[in-house]
Length: 408
Image (tube, rainbow, N blue to C red; front, side):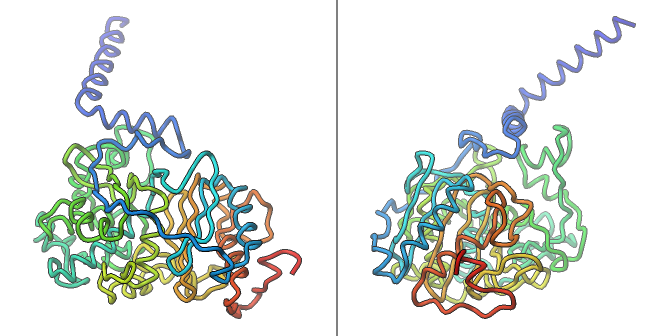
């Protein structure tokens, strides 16, 4: 009996060693993810990578808050709130000028960060370029035209718009600590797209909103196959260099493989303000058209499956019961991991917060005067708004300046 147990243990060890040798990147990613848990993963986790050459231009010029009709006291209050919630940076711009910056933990404008799901909105902008460059016919084009493995499959009827609106209908993969599970294989393994292509439909495309990696990752596959260019090359040529951003890197599932769109986009943190400017200016950057001006309004159109969202953009006009309302009706948010980018087109204001996930994330959007340990998603933008001299507050039931700025 002991001999049998010994041989069984040896066989398990051999299988484990062979598994690690066969796919060492899987085990590296799996082990690091288990070690760090919900904490921010180190940048060296995101290997292998592919370079996205940028224009490497200087950042936008600086203007004083007063020159842009902003109250420094309100900006300092926003910085105090950010600093008390594990932030690395708070950078605010208006009309294309930097007006306020505050950094923690040795961070700076040029500090590279892993941008979380913010990479999704870049993929959405690239989809517009591919459509207006006539590589993709229209937003409702079925992806079976490009993902030929699904050409004769019902999943091929999923449209580009369905992917943009997180409504592919593909079954979501729940987190699983078991390294031999399909979910772990999808999260940490190589050739991730092949695993996506085995996912069945759970709902009809366009009917069910689920925020998951498969939709933006498949969007990148569609862009790459439609343009006949590497995703990184198309991103660099049509967008990243044109907005003057610094060199960036994309995380791949294997050397020369496919892109993880909503994870592992390593970017100089200040460059997210450039993307913010594109969104605020309907695709223009410093007067030049980078994305067709018709495209950004389409991205902001509410999804039929979830009216709180457009295409990877959260629409601030929709406020769930019990959540603090944004004081600007046209505000929208790009958010991923610990990075928030609040954008207010009517005032041409962009607010970038980077850092760890704040404590109290389970209570996102709770009342503004809640305990400081509970993160209020609306607090920072509302403080900035009420320090903007030409801002006219939106009248909403129960919303008043006393709920935003104490003692008013």
